Image 1: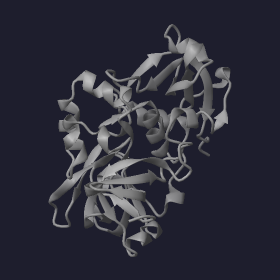
Image 2: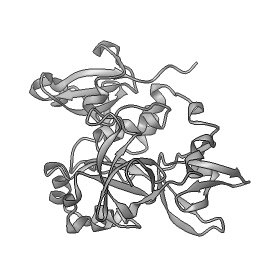
Image 3: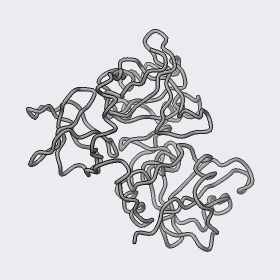
Length: 309
């Protein structure tokens, strides 16, 4: 299986640090199908926090996305995620995925990149058989190649073969290059839809985001591909002075009152506020910077968006 690619065949696959990272409580996130709601609701706050404190999770990846296979050990596959740039590995974000959550690509499937695509704009929608039976739920930002357009749905090519997704739940583009690059206000508008969603360490889906997963996905939804982690996000983009900050900019926060290592990223909301996914045990929220501990930790601002003409 070395040097091959595969596609994710579950709603959202968790990228584990290594196979031993999975606890008994995590079984519903490590099988096929996954039961994300059951997994998240079944964890105590302490068990959720342990995903971070015990370095169990690296990231997540959505249905249909390509992974590059590095190695396989028993029921686990070592992969990198090309769609998630990181300084950890030039090829993409590294980690382990249960082999049952992967469908190895064939030569025919490798032509997917030449097809038009749809991207889910709703928080969740359903992937259906051509006859209309639900196969599995799809998260916001899931991207799939289109084979044919019908009156009310698109026929899409997936790890489950030819399936369909409702037109009202997705945006369609002729190619990835044609995804419009929207302005900062559009980034904020996308973020507002997730206010109240509970934080999930490593989270990269509408079932839960961590801080940099939230910024990554809100920018991706608006046409911008950025690095996965906060420290890498802070090293790219265009530097912005505090007095020039605008909605949609990314604000970074560091230990030692802004002089230490970067530990957090937020989206500037406007009017001195941020919208962000703060920490385990909290929900995505809009928060005033002044008077919070973030005020002293704010160390950098980056802009990835461009003004719409």
